[in-house]
Length: 95
Image (tube, rainbow, N blue to C red; front, top):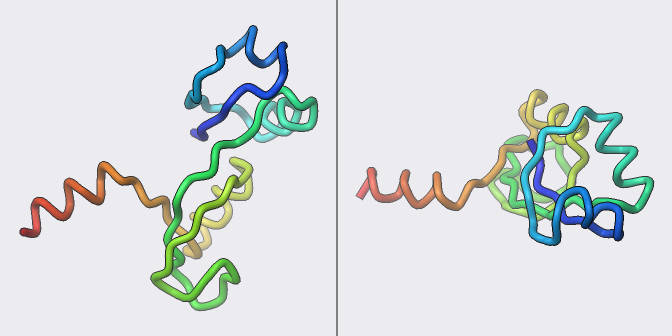
C-alpha cells in the first residue's frame, strides 16, 4: 500500500483532493503516475543495510518510492518503513 495525492483533474475526480492510501498493482501505479494523474507522497524510511546509498545504516530518509521498488528494497533487507504511530507506541511500551 502506498500514499498518493491527485495531480490532475481526472485524478481529483476519481480520488478527491486529499492524500489517500491505496493498493495499486505496480503497472496500475506506473500508469497513474506516468499519466500525471497521481503523485506518490514521500514517506519516511530507515536504512537497515550498509550498502544502500540513501544513508548510513540506522539513518532515516524520506522518499517517494514506487510500490515495486519499495517492495524489493524491503524484501532485500535494505530499508524499513518508519511509521510515526508505531514508533510512538513502541517508545511508550519501552518507557
